[in-house]
Amino acid sequence: MIRIENISKQLSHRILFIEASAALNRGEKIGLVGPNGAGKTSLFRMIIGHEQPDEGQVSVDKGVSIGYFSQDVGEMSGRSAVAEVMDGAGPVSEVAAELRELEAAMVDPDRMDEMDAIIERYGEVQARYEELDGYALDGRAREVLAGLSFSESMMDGDVGALSGGWKMRVALARILLMRPDVMLLDEPSNHLDLESLIWLEQFLKGYEGALLMTSHDREFMNRIVNKIIEIDAGQLNSYSGDYVFYEGQRALNEKHQQSQFERQQAMLAKEIKFIERFKARASHASQVQSRVKKLEKIDRVEPPKRRQVVAFEFQPAPRSGEDVVSVKNVSKRYGDKVIYDGFDFMVRRRERWCIMGINGAGKSTLLKLVAGDSKPDEGTVSIGASVKMGYFAQHAMDVLDGDMTIFEMLETSFPRAGQAPLRALAGCFGFSGDDIDKRVRVLSGGEKARLVMAMMLFDPPNLLVLDEPTNHLDLDTKEMLIKALSQFEGTMLFVSHDRHFLGALSNRVLEITPEGVFQYGGGYTEYVERTGHEAPGLRS
Image 1 (cartoon, rainbow, N blue to C red):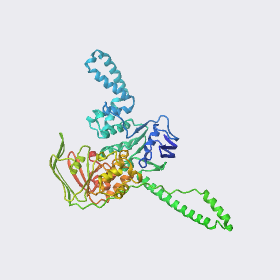
Image 2: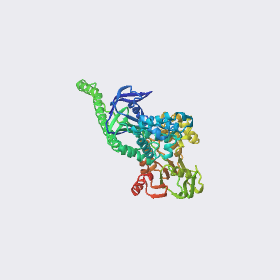
Image 3: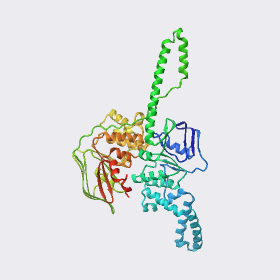
Image 4: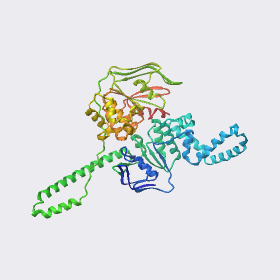
């Protein structure tokens, strides 16, 4: 269906691809992986024809329809979410728009003299709408939006009033309703809650077309893809199987390549030693000459490319008292909406609570109450003795000063620290060499998240309150964070939609539902086993 043949591509000074080739065949579900900046989005743009390779070609079979979801959704306003989603389904959306205009005209008193013509045209347009199966399409659009956690009022309201994250969902719904022959999805799991994520997972499993997607959620990718294409040093390497198989295979390949490299280096060293030893002796001239020619012809084995590994290191945190957080008889409302009513909750030392609940259940509200960003209407939230808190909020990155460099940001936050410890801190969080002099405004979402964490953990807390800490982080960085947090000896209270993160770190679950608040001993994995569902909103 889609063939990528010997493409080369350079962006300014950065080489993305060097004579790289790959193919996407009918029915394949492929995960595209590679570090930030490797060229994943550029590859998508070349497939849809928005960019051209410098050399080689990208060819798409005739008649193949492609739906492309990107992080750049553009402007949306003036229409309902349903109308915006139906817009991707071709001419039916134009007919639907005219139908709505005619309906408005029929009740407009200023157009009474045109009424006969309006009614006649309405009949024609309605017949065309039915012919295009418009009413069924409207139902399917609402089904997709409901799967992505839209309420009825949000579906019918102006899409312009929605936040950026919800607009992303509208753009995704548009592609899903299209059901093209090929879907290209660039980070579809961003901005989705756990319920929507699991719904999308089921949808894509049942999708019969070909799929090429990127995602920073390994669990999500693992359950959908049957092939991995890795962008590595300008090449496209294909692996059959899911993400876990790819990781194992990649590690084996690197180990094999390393041993081949070492064997060849030992052989070369031996030959060079012989040449150096006997090159001045006439009796060995022919042997020396023969070995020199042999070395000239030999294909050199390259060592495996070293991946940049970010290593988060936590300094030992001071010990807190046994009772870390106490929530007593707390009530909290937003307008008419009751979030908590007479809520009691206790967090003890070294407990790791993950907070679960559908959108709007009050997960972030609870973290804000604990962090002191919000006050309860009634009741008390108290922090225990010797508790030192680190709070990572969803808006934490907004407090960064875009005009400052990374190093200036760290210096401002810790004026008493010397240069050496601050540079070491930056290095631990993946900012080495000249990176430390980058302006904050040019950083990616993942890099900003790393910087906020570096600032939070320099003077280590013993209570971490984390609201979606893995958003924007790539797979390798996320893995490093999980590894570091698993060694953290303090207490944790967190919200995340990443199931791998939840399973690896939680040892308690607090589930917030309309029926009440439930506590579970054991972590997320035990919660799934006991309840039979992966998220509260999926309860039958």
